[in-house]
Image: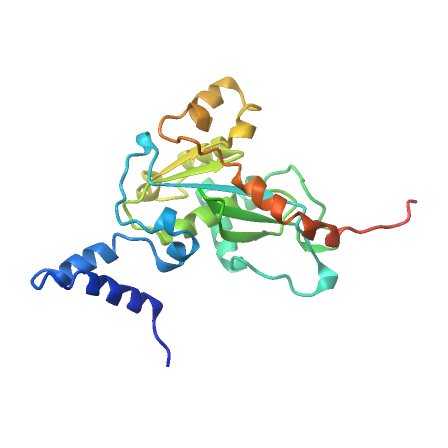
Length: 254
């Protein structure tokens, strides 16, 4: 017998408020729609299990997440179809949306810095979004030679689709300063999301940025972020390090 998990979740919330005979339904609906979706709660109840959201970004916001790309985890053409974490059509839709927002040809909106060779690979890397407790939330395949903004924007957009509208999110990212400026200059996200979103760099990478950038985006200098440093993605890649050797290719030197 098939059963909706979301329906069961709502039934559980309704049962918790059943002691109030008059306002049980209204209270249950209010609680249910002020909480995160079940998939996020299952990933990390500590980050997403609450029902109280709306803490000001000036005070650190409600949720801290970090993201990063890794070009060591590639997938060879010869190994068959690449496992898809995030639907490629979703990523492509974000790419076209960014190009439309920039109002110039697609090829000009993409980075020219090549981080990985595409020879023999259909996926050149992975991009991960993790919570404050270093638990992986979502991945997306990187199929370009560089870490383009479409991947990070796709992950953020998907995260917000699973959060209550009043939740405020701080994103820690190596080039969070660049992504923040892009989203401010171009109409990529609507104002509702932009008002609930704040970017910082990761703590380690912040010190390679100019001092003017650090004053705005260094998490160690921002009030309310506490011990959040955004380096959890490095811990994640460290756990996956044994998978990298499988992808190494040896050949005779010419």
